[in-house]
Image (tube, rainbow, N blue to C red; front, side, top):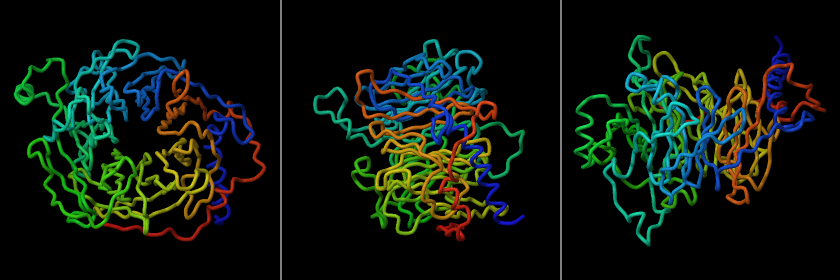
Length: 492
């Protein structure tokens, strides 16, 4: 098949997957927007996640509250109150229906399980039988006390400054099975963990059903533990240091036992970035995500690098861009574990291809640098692969734009397929995409009715779509044929 024919097929397939999103947002001459605002939060929305059944959606906000919504009727079902009123809620994650089913009652009391994180370093686990009913906080993880670093002023004191907290939890994910080895037997018992982050660490927490665990927890906390509490113990912590240190600055350790990371400390040879969120200019975890398809954990750090970690806590690949004097704000995998998308504080979207060889050697290649669509110099906050074959990629940022890209493009891409939404008065901090809905959260904290969550329904059924009235092929899709991609730094 000729190269031009392949390029044309790629264009057609990409536009086919893009069509439902264009229709839902009412762009490119399609039907009016199917936007549904959901009012309930009083301040910015920082985190969003859909339930496994996709009937419900949970949001985390600067107003210190977490809210649960009915997606079909865009109705508020519940408000979860328990995080410190002095700190915003940053993230929310919904557990799969099978997570921890060997220890928890996932059919009754714990049928729905949520994790929420705050800027004060606390993570709470909530459960209920029905999302319309009352949610119960089953446990609270306080990173400051659990990691042996509890210090500073009490929240009740008059001179307490919430901005002094260094334990913002930006990464939060339920992992059904943490793969300690590359190839495992299907009959092997599941190893469910909850992943969190704080400062320059990613933590893996596991469920404990051992009878001595409760006694140990009571002795450490000096108080009786509710029998209904979910007991969480540290499985492993991955500490990130200077990339020029041994092991590329990555050390696997246990902080709750030793109280300190085991990696050597010293002056950084490469500084971190991050603006107001990183005032000391140090290495900081801005985002992390585990991929079940390949068993790798990826972390986007404030020094501008992405480090890929295997199940034993060893760094196997480092992704860096030459002369990149900015910080990475987010990181995401595609469903196959062979592609990565990262966003940068400069407003760029970077895509990568990951090739994992049978001998364990991993090769990473920078595939595309996407610009345009977003305002240059203003940070993006996230990206996500979408569509049945994930030929599309959405990105969002502080400029209030939601852009739709062709995810397989290579080289320098100057514009997206479309800017699905733009509102400079509504910075976008979080986006989630289910099989039939896009949820969008952000805001500037102003408004008489509060800050809305926006829902956009879409369908891939051809009968629900009208022909797209495009006068020409989007400029970005004309970049299919490009020079060979640039190799990034590789670790053997």
